[in-house]
Image (cartoon, rainbow, N blue to C red; front, side, top):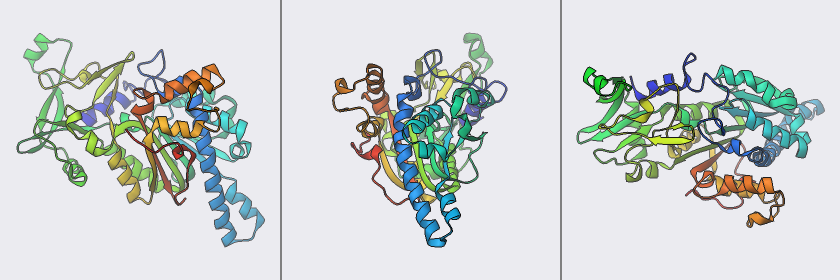
Length: 391
């Protein structure tokens, strides 16, 4: 089977998939650490950006309605609906943090917010009501699929990196694809705990070669890379469903010229288990992500160039692409005193949380933020006010 098919089973199979069998996998008791695990501050800062976006969408909707009718009831309806969609929502912790902050600082936005949680895991969906608590009154839908149509903001935090990827390797005669197959008997005797190995074969779909051709990236013989067809399809579909508003994608990855370079010539597929990461192996050493399928996270870096291009093909505009450090500093500045000096942040707990979220070398520079807009023009957003830079 392709590596993408293997990942799909290992991560999302309803019976034994890693994500399907638990409501939460991150945090101190989990296998990896996300910005949400730092505390409520991440959601509070995102709420600043979402509230600004909600005002932009509301103003545009009101202008459209005013041009079409003078009916007061129609005008009121146009500005009283705001869809907040979180994809890959897990048990709903991020949305709960966002909604708590919006209710406190922007009650008008809170009152007209319709929350849609998108999550593949039935176990995680089952925990969402309890996690949301009193903000659960805003929840309209909780399903594995995006709403068919919505107007507002779509947020996806560390979703694309967990989508199944194809792995290909460049040879002298062109691209070859890696497949997951059962180990030969002699391998089973020498390594009884490993039953799966990688083998080369022809490409499973011409879409893989087309993907690399569109990027105009040159791979040297021996380079092994991952191609995330699912992420491109997902963002294209999301952009089609968004009538007007914003898409905020937060994940770790790179522009294509960096991702498909000698720096990552061994590929980026890796596992996370008990906060320990192990990178992809070579043909001489079986990849660690083949071991214990369903018991560990599997992830790969995101190609933001292709993701952005897919969204733009569907009518979106790129409003910003930057490190999480600069994104959060732009949002924090009006709320946490002088964030150019962390010592000036008055609350110790928030000061430590902000440091974790923005420090270079950690979440701050590892995580990238891609902000897309559709039908909203090119507004100057707070999240892009500090500095627009992706390292």
